[in-house]
Image 1 (cartoon, rainbow, N blue to C red):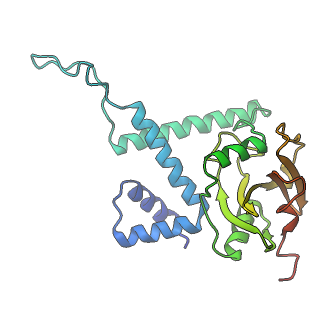
Image 2 (image 1 turned 30 degrees about the vertical axis):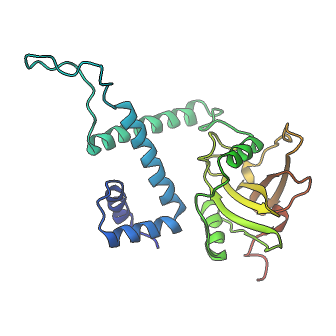
Image 3 (image 1 turned 90 degrees about the vertical axis):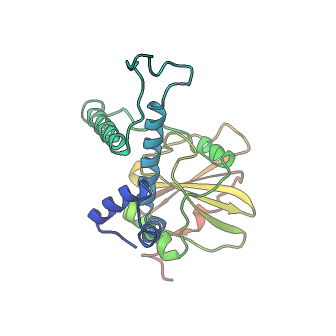
Length: 249
C-alpha cells in the first residue's frame, strides 16, 4: 500500500502522536510493512524524539525547582511535541548544512563512518540477528532491491537456506559501503549468513576479516555488488542470487 505524499506526512505526524483512528492506524502500519523507507522514517523520528526528550529531561528531584516566596528558579522544561518537532527540524537543517559542506568542500569525508562487514555481522549476531523488515513474496523482495538500486534481485530457493529479512544498520554504527547499503539476514543450515548489497559503482576492496572463523565473499551481479559474511569458506547465498529480468522464471 502506497500513500499520497501529503497524506503520508499527515499520517506520520498523527501516528507519532498516537492520534490516528484505529482504521487509519491499521492502514498506516500496513503501509510501513510494504514500504521500508517509511518504516525507517518512523524509526528515525522516534530516535530523534527520544534523544530530544533525554536532552530536555527535568533535573533530579534534589535540584531546586522553585524558591519560596513565589520566585521561580531556573529549570529545564520538557518541550511539547510541537516544540520537539521544531528542534528536530532545526537539527535536520544543521545536518543538511553539514552534509552540503562535506560534499562541496570536503569530498573525501564520509557521511557515515566506515565499518568492516565482519564487524557489522558480529554486532548483528550479538543483537539477536532479528530482521527489521520481512518480504513475504518474491515480488516484494525483488521490488525492494530494484527501488533502491535500479535493478532487481532474487535468491534461488535452496534446501537449508532461509531468508530471514532485511536489517537497516540499527544494530551497528556506520556503513559497510554507503548509506544506501541493504543488509540481508539469512541462515544456512541454522548458521547466520549476512549479505551486504549496493550499487556496483560503490564496490571497493575489503580485506578478509581478522577473525579466522569468519570469511568474506564478493560477487558482482549486473549493476549490483554483493558481499557475504559467514563462517563458511565458500559462498552460500550470493552464488544463488540472480536478476529476474534476465533469467526466465
